[in-house]
Image 1 (cartoon, helix red, strand yellow):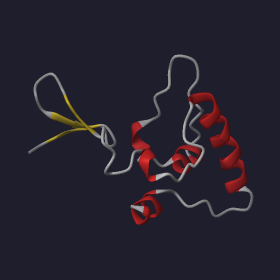
Image 2: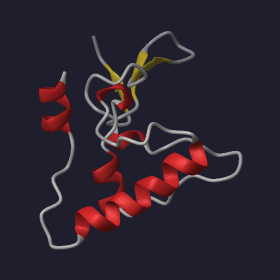
Image 3: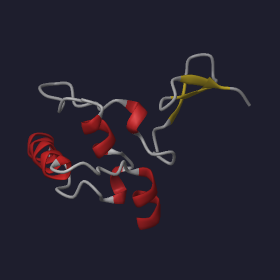
Length: 97
């Protein structure tokens, strides 16, 4: 599973980015009770991509992160909608069988 995590997380390559990301994630982990390790494969989420994309740490009652940063194998990537079809939350489209 470690290879999956490595392959699905954004790589921060500019000087200082990783440190800024770590501060941002530490705040998120503290405020939302997340695992302190942003690379834990149990997240199924690209937090670096979210940070780089300008996502603010959810606060208050809202604790949902944007679905576009879910890993391909995220357990809630596909959801069943009212008409019984499946919806891909990552790419925001109905799945055609």
